[in-house]
Length: 144
View 1 (tube, rainbow, N blue to C red):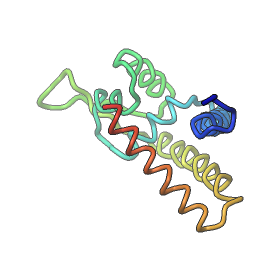
View 2: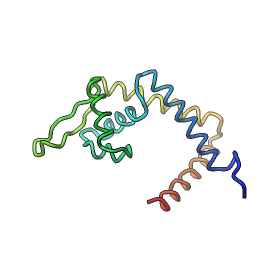
View 3: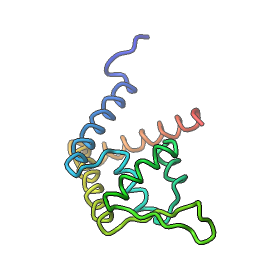
Protein backbone atom coordinates (compact mmCIF):
# COMPACT_ATOMS: atom_id res chain seq x y z
CA UNK A 1 0.00 0.00 0.00
CA UNK A 2 1.28 3.42 -0.94
CA UNK A 3 0.66 6.61 1.05
CA UNK A 4 -1.36 9.04 -1.07
CA UNK A 5 -2.30 12.70 -0.73
CA UNK A 6 -5.97 11.88 -0.28
CA UNK A 7 -5.49 9.31 2.48
CA UNK A 8 -7.48 9.99 5.64
CA UNK A 9 -4.51 10.94 7.79
CA UNK A 10 -3.16 13.30 5.12
CA UNK A 11 -6.54 14.99 4.71
CA UNK A 12 -6.87 15.42 8.48
CA UNK A 13 -3.36 16.89 8.57
CA UNK A 14 -4.17 19.27 5.70
CA UNK A 15 -7.40 20.38 7.37
CA UNK A 16 -5.53 20.91 10.64
CA UNK A 17 -2.95 23.07 8.86
CA UNK A 18 -5.65 25.12 7.12
CA UNK A 19 -7.49 25.55 10.42
CA UNK A 20 -4.30 26.58 12.22
CA UNK A 21 -3.44 29.13 9.52
CA UNK A 22 -6.95 30.62 9.62
CA UNK A 23 -6.87 30.94 13.41
CA UNK A 24 -3.31 32.30 13.51
CA UNK A 25 -4.18 34.94 10.89
CA UNK A 26 -7.30 36.04 12.77
CA UNK A 27 -5.52 36.05 16.15
CA UNK A 28 -2.74 38.18 14.72
CA UNK A 29 -5.30 40.95 14.19
CA UNK A 30 -5.85 41.06 17.97
CA UNK A 31 -2.11 40.72 18.70
CA UNK A 32 -2.23 37.17 20.08
CA UNK A 33 -0.74 33.83 19.14
CA UNK A 34 -2.53 30.51 19.54
CA UNK A 35 -0.95 29.65 22.92
CA UNK A 36 -1.90 33.02 24.36
CA UNK A 37 -5.45 32.71 23.04
CA UNK A 38 -5.85 29.14 24.32
CA UNK A 39 -4.51 30.25 27.71
CA UNK A 40 -7.01 33.10 28.00
CA UNK A 41 -9.87 30.88 26.88
CA UNK A 42 -8.91 28.16 29.39
CA UNK A 43 -8.71 30.66 32.26
CA UNK A 44 -12.09 32.04 31.19
CA UNK A 45 -13.60 28.54 31.43
CA UNK A 46 -11.71 27.75 34.69
CA UNK A 47 -11.45 30.97 36.74
CA UNK A 48 -9.01 30.56 39.62
CA UNK A 49 -7.14 27.74 37.91
CA UNK A 50 -3.47 27.25 38.71
CA UNK A 51 -0.53 27.35 36.33
CA UNK A 52 0.05 23.58 36.49
CA UNK A 53 -3.47 22.90 35.19
CA UNK A 54 -2.96 25.36 32.36
CA UNK A 55 0.41 23.79 31.58
CA UNK A 56 -1.19 20.34 31.39
CA UNK A 57 -3.97 21.65 29.14
CA UNK A 58 -1.52 23.34 26.75
CA UNK A 59 0.90 20.42 26.83
CA UNK A 60 3.75 22.85 27.54
CA UNK A 61 6.45 23.07 30.19
CA UNK A 62 5.73 25.30 33.16
CA UNK A 63 8.57 27.66 32.19
CA UNK A 64 6.91 28.25 28.81
CA UNK A 65 3.55 28.86 30.49
CA UNK A 66 5.20 31.27 32.95
CA UNK A 67 6.41 33.36 29.99
CA UNK A 68 2.96 33.31 28.39
CA UNK A 69 1.29 34.37 31.64
CA UNK A 70 3.82 37.13 32.30
CA UNK A 71 3.17 38.64 28.88
CA UNK A 72 -0.63 38.41 29.28
CA UNK A 73 -0.38 39.92 32.76
CA UNK A 74 1.82 42.77 31.47
CA UNK A 75 -0.80 43.49 28.78
CA UNK A 76 -3.48 43.71 31.46
CA UNK A 77 -5.44 40.60 30.48
CA UNK A 78 -5.03 38.54 33.62
CA UNK A 79 -4.25 38.63 37.33
CA UNK A 80 -2.33 36.15 39.43
CA UNK A 81 -3.58 36.04 43.02
CA UNK A 82 -1.63 34.31 45.78
CA UNK A 83 -3.58 31.69 47.73
CA UNK A 84 -3.96 32.42 51.44
CA UNK A 85 -2.83 28.92 52.43
CA UNK A 86 -0.01 28.55 49.88
CA UNK A 87 2.17 31.54 49.00
CA UNK A 88 3.89 29.65 46.18
CA UNK A 89 0.69 28.89 44.28
CA UNK A 90 -1.19 31.56 42.37
CA UNK A 91 -4.72 31.44 41.03
CA UNK A 92 -5.33 32.87 37.57
CA UNK A 93 -8.18 35.25 36.77
CA UNK A 94 -9.06 37.37 33.76
CA UNK A 95 -9.39 41.13 33.98
CA UNK A 96 -12.25 42.94 32.25
CA UNK A 97 -9.94 43.49 29.26
CA UNK A 98 -9.14 39.76 29.27
CA UNK A 99 -12.84 38.85 29.35
CA UNK A 100 -13.48 41.12 26.37
CA UNK A 101 -10.59 39.58 24.49
CA UNK A 102 -11.93 36.07 25.16
CA UNK A 103 -15.19 37.14 23.48
CA UNK A 104 -13.14 38.10 20.41
CA UNK A 105 -11.21 34.81 20.56
CA UNK A 106 -14.37 32.74 20.78
CA UNK A 107 -15.85 34.65 17.82
CA UNK A 108 -12.89 33.51 15.72
CA UNK A 109 -13.60 29.87 16.56
CA UNK A 110 -17.34 30.29 15.98
CA UNK A 111 -16.60 31.82 12.57
CA UNK A 112 -14.27 28.92 11.73
CA UNK A 113 -16.89 26.38 12.76
CA UNK A 114 -19.45 28.13 10.56
CA UNK A 115 -17.06 28.04 7.59
CA UNK A 116 -16.35 24.34 8.13
CA UNK A 117 -20.03 23.43 8.33
CA UNK A 118 -21.16 25.72 5.50
CA UNK A 119 -20.75 23.24 2.61
CA UNK A 120 -22.24 20.31 4.57
CA UNK A 121 -25.80 19.09 4.82
CA UNK A 122 -26.96 18.54 8.39
CA UNK A 123 -26.71 14.76 8.03
CA UNK A 124 -23.19 15.04 6.56
CA UNK A 125 -22.14 17.22 9.46
CA UNK A 126 -23.41 14.69 11.98
CA UNK A 127 -21.75 11.79 10.12
CA UNK A 128 -18.39 13.58 10.01
CA UNK A 129 -18.66 14.56 13.66
CA UNK A 130 -19.43 10.99 14.69
CA UNK A 131 -16.56 9.64 12.60
CA UNK A 132 -14.07 12.15 13.97
CA UNK A 133 -15.14 11.39 17.55
CA UNK A 134 -14.68 7.68 16.85
CA UNK A 135 -11.17 8.31 15.46
CA UNK A 136 -10.29 10.52 18.43
CA UNK A 137 -11.43 7.88 20.91
CA UNK A 138 -9.49 5.17 19.08
CA UNK A 139 -6.29 7.24 18.99
CA UNK A 140 -6.69 8.17 22.66
CA UNK A 141 -6.90 4.46 23.51
CA UNK A 142 -3.69 3.58 21.69
CA UNK A 143 -1.75 6.72 22.72
CA UNK A 144 -2.00 6.96 26.51
